Length: 258
Image 1: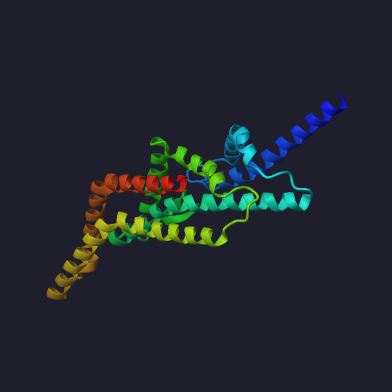
Image 2: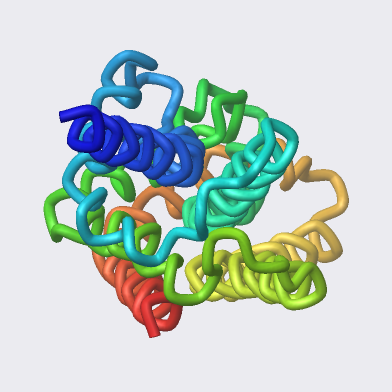
């Protein structure tokens, strides 16, 4: 009987240890993942989702965990490392939504709305009107197209790449983050490319008009037309632009999943 109680106690301790280790990574990732970690999502809801995902994957990931550390210091170091991986994964995927803000900022500058600001939920800060609008649409499309499943799978699949307890490849992590930042800028610039082209042509035409008619305050008179033309172009291309972003997100997440 005492041996059975001892075995049961060891099993419970092992499950509690596994839950703590897995939740350290999953919980911190859910605090930053697009759609899950946005400021308008209640902290309690994020916590409940992270707990639910941890309980679901616990039996699957338990065999991949290292043995229970001998001391409290070893356990603390392991939990901190797992939390760091979670923060890294959340920040990495957050770069994908940053591309929307980059595109929105460029578009706003080209159509004369660079001074129109509102709260951007994706970044939890003030942003341009177009960037915030595209941020809302992007989060909605993530869930409508089920790409949020790929976000969760990317976190779970990270256990194959970053084994718990193993030495973290800091150089590779920094390189991956650098490439993701560059990719987000590239995606944002590509999304805003039509507005860059139209903006350059519009400003060239405006400069020629000002040169031919110096007495006309062209930049003040044509400002309303610039905004109207920009909004009309945005209405035409916003669908294709968001589909391009969705394709880029899917490609990036597929690369993370291997």
